[in-house]
Image 1 (spheres, rainbow, N blue to C red):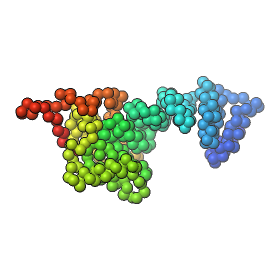
Image 2: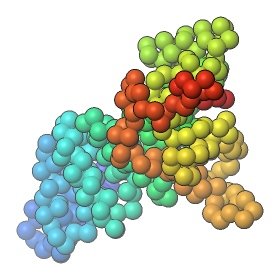
Image 3: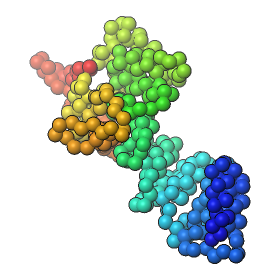
Length: 347
């Protein structure tokens, strides 16, 4: 390969001259005076595809990336397939996007699997596959190479809300709050947390979360969030902010399915080890915090705990009793022998 021409192409790309970089990479590929070593064809097509993406030409980029994957000697299979997935997603071809994201995460040499898992989760959400998307976002959050798991946890909460599991959504959002993030992301996170609190009947907490989301006056609630905000305010004003009856039907099903929920965040019954991240301290990621008798850094333990909230999500929804179910397992007789619904305290 003509190394001088290749370096010129890289320099043009670095200064955002994508058209010039594309021309130089193409010339390098077609240079008859320099032979190409094994893997260099794939490398050049990979870079050509990157230029085409920057030039907003995803169709041609897909063609270039496909040529790169055809070079068996090129060992960046994961990165190329991630780029293919993103290109297909930009064309709203989410089925093909998921296929290439799956290839990317299967490449043991690919060191940014969290990117492919996040892309896969977004594509699966577009396809209406909330449970599968939740699994993908969980993997993205748990990846130790992920420098910012907050978006994955935020999207994981979105999946739980779509699955009518607001208690798990609360756990995911509260887990995300343990990490540093940009103000706009934090505002959105608090707004989503407010809606999850409303769905689980925790109206005072919902009001507090909504207030936090709009405190700096840079974030505006969506229509649905505004409705939930007003519901929460009204419930608090009427003194019914912590009464079980105000809970949404989905929240009641979630509590029956997973057991009694304590205010500390741990869940008994259902999936063992499901906990909220209750610690409010946010040490820097470069300053691991250890606790007596427990191994691993604070960040690593957060990732492991965050992962616990999505265990069993592949079967989510299938085990929940239907709305209006008369299953006697969810009732118990009082002293008069009549059946009444089990009341679950809400904290």
